[in-house]
Amino acid sequence: MKPEFTMDKSIYLQIAESIEDDILQQVVEEESQVPSTNQMAVLYRINPATAAKGINLLVSEGIIYKKRGIGMFVSTGAVKKIRSKRKTAFFDNFIVPMMAEATNLEISREEVAELIKGAGEKIR
Image: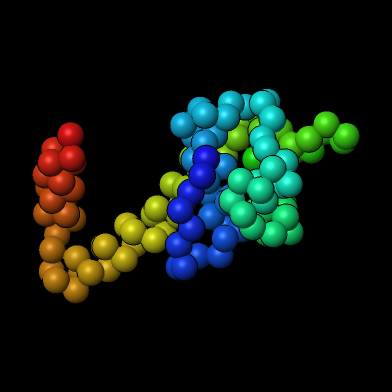
C-alpha cells in the first residue's frame, strides 16, 4: 500500500485508488480497519488533509465508514461497489473510445471481438 505517485492525477485520488486496490486484492478485507489519515500522511509523506480527502471520497462512495473514536473500516459489500464502479469506468474510458475508433476504421464488431480474443490469449 505504498504507491508511486504520478503527475497525471491528484494525489488524493491516487490514495483512494490505492486503498481500493488493497480492498480488491484482499490485502484489506471487508470490515477491517484501514490506516488513519495521520498514518497515511506519514507513510506517503503528504499533508494529512490530502490523505483525508482521499479517505472522504471513499466514505462518500460507501466503500469505507467511520466508527467514531475507533477509526475507518471497509464497508461490507465494498468489493462489489469498487468492481461495479471500475467496470463502468472501464466501459466509458476504454470500450466506448475503442468502438468509436473501430467505427472510424470500418472494423466490424466481430473483428473487434476476434482482436480482443487474440489479445487475451497473448496475456495468459
